Image 1 (spheres, helix red, strand yellow):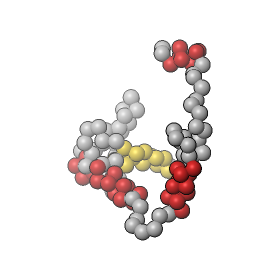
Image 2: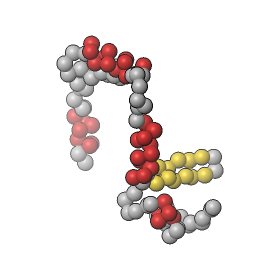
Image 3: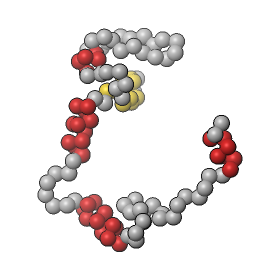
Image 4: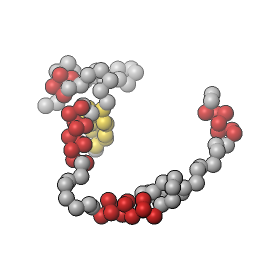
Length: 106
């Protein structure tokens, strides 16, 4: 089903009144947006959709995966306070340049 909408001068689009109830869209519902050839797609991130995604990402019961074993080995070899898992350096980043700090405060 294709519904039409008009982009206003501010670049905003009003969602047709049939969609929010059907798609569980409420004020402040976050949406994922993507661009496909010739199309702009928006998908609401409702609580139901977030739960579906979490179920997909939950590890299945059974033996640990190769990633779990690798992370466990890295944690065992790490010194206290060291960040492990992504080959990040354990030293803190340098302080920001004074000019960058003053620009950020504008």
